[in-house]
Structures are given as C-alpha cells and as structure tokens.
Length: 319
Image 1 (cartoon, rainbow, N blue to C red):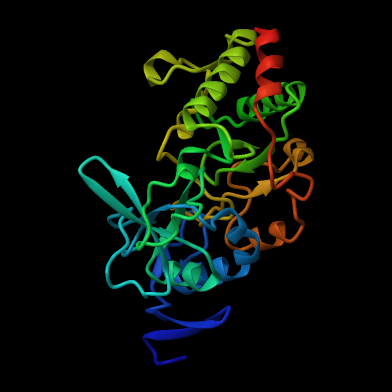
Image 2: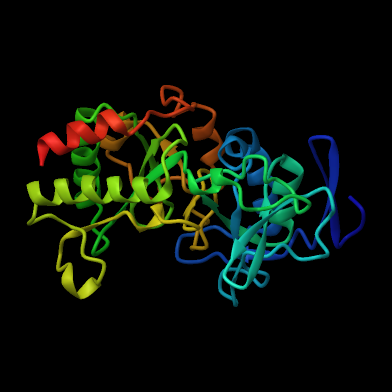
C-alpha cells in the first residue's frame, strides 16, 4: 500500500499504483454483490495468463467507467498522453489522420487499465504485426488480415433457449465445413462463436465468408434465425450478427468484464458446457471467472487456424 487512497500492485516485472481502489464501480442490490475498483484489478490480474494471449498485438477499444457503471461512460480509442511510456501503442490510419490505439501486451498494462476504470476491453480481430509502435507506420497489412472470425448470437429477448439452439446449429455447420470453433459467453445476453484463421485472408474475404455461412444457416432455419440488421425486421428470430468481421470492428475479449450489475464476465467455455442446466451468458462473474479460466476450456482449439479455401468449397457445395 502507498496510502489510504492508493494501492501498489505487482504485475509481472512492474509495480502499478492503483488510485482509489475502494471506489465502488459495481453497486450492490437486487441480489447482486458490490464490487470495487480493487476487485476489478484483482480479477484482471488473476486472469492475465489466460487473457493476454488473446490481446497481444491487437489494437483495443476501451470502455471506461470512471464513476462506476451507473455513471457516464466513454469509449476510448486514442491512448491518452499521460499513460506510462512502457504501454505499447500502435498508430492506425484513419480518414484524415491516425488513431493511436492502446495494445495490451503484458499484465502491468492490464492492471493499469483496470486502475483507470476500464471495465471492458474490445479487441480487433487482427494483429499489428511489425507495426507495433508509434515510431513505425500503422499501415501493416496484418491489420487487414484477421486471424479470428466471430459470429455474434444476439437474441431478440431475454430467453436464452434460442441462443443455445443457434449455437448448436452453427457449431454443426462449422464442423461440416471442417473449421475449428470456440464458444464464449458474452457476459451480456448472447454467445460468440469464434473461428481461428491463419491470418492470410483479407478482411473483406473473411467478412463475406461469414455472411455466406450465416445466410446458409438462416436459409435452413428461416423461422428461427435471421441476418436482418434492423430490429424491426427480425421479429422473434435470433440475429446472426457477422458485422464484427469488418475492418476496424471489435469484439469483446475473453475474460473481460461487462458493465452490468454483478460484474458478469465474457468467458470461454467448452461445447459440452452448452447443455449444462445452469449455463447462460452471465453464468460467470469476477467472483469465479478465474476458476473457469483455470480449466483451460479452449485447450482443444488450435491457436493457429485454418485457411478458408477448402471451407469455401464445402460451403458453396451446400448452397
């Protein structure tokens, strides 16, 4: 401790000062416990070994809640100038300039961000490659070549049964295409199904492939699934969202906390857990997400994914 208003946290080879660790970020009530900034820091420190492999080299969009989840929030893309120099940045071109994104490469950065009341980390689906510091150009072609493809299963209401069913159907289709897939709760209402790729396909090709997979599944189950982007066109059908596969789009990172009562966490799970009676999108919180992480639920998912060429041929044969 460095005083009543601060706490010193050891993270890897560094120490990080966390100010106002007792500040409440998640108020209690309605059956939910209260969690402080210190609790958020402890969660991210505990899951760092499991989370960092999914963050390293990826530009981040940070969801900040300086006054807790009931106060104002803002989404942070540009890295503030007062952040420590040891935090990695990457300059990404945009129309009329650049965005200097934060990149979380180590546990100290993770702890520092939590200490800044960053509740949720949204990651790019591609990595920076050699464009890994502000002294280099951010225009690395690797940013245009994602190594992850994401299907977001977004229900029309609070009923989780359609999400569970859609995940099973999508998993079966991906198995038919011989693509590995991983399942993750979002910590909110739905699930993400993630496909690791080899990083050699342009983002436009990946997005089109995801669209074609979604359209194929919707054509087989038009009464239960939809790809309609507008809510008024969906009815009671579950939305198969593939928009996160566009360039510069983000998806919530594994083991990140959501700004909701009880501090639910987006947690990787096994496909077998999908059928568990207590399974749901907010099943894990910062109280027990690290325990789930230690079971290594994605142990059988390859870190390096497949090429889309063979899968594209199989998909075209089905359509």
